[in-house]
Length: 116
Image 1 (cartoon, rainbow, N blue to C red):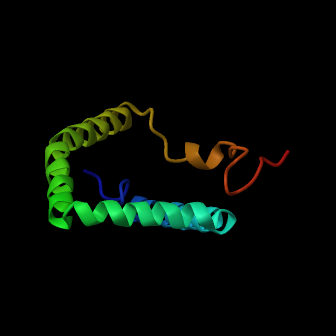
Image 2 (cartoon, rainbow, N blue to C red; image 1 turned 30 degrees about the vertical axis):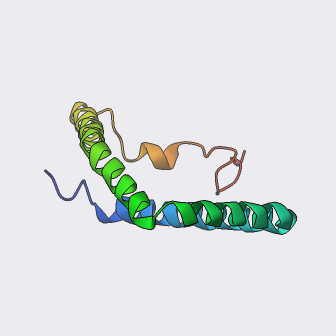
């Protein structure tokens, strides 16, 4: 694999920044929703706490871990298929790194609407 054409640092940094932005926006949306309807938020929290009282935390963690272990094999297959598809497109010359810089931004993109 040619290391000068493919760098893991840049996509990884972009992915982390995207996850951070999404998480921050989600947190802001939840905070706004709680501030707008505090009675509903307190009620949901109370019901959730009441239900957690009956279900042991170990049972919930065991269920989540089992779900993750069952789903990891299909996720690896899907990830491998995506990478194989990218590799084949790159080998045939359809994947161009300069195409991202030359295309017009979307209307709802963070960079704003396209400038005419």
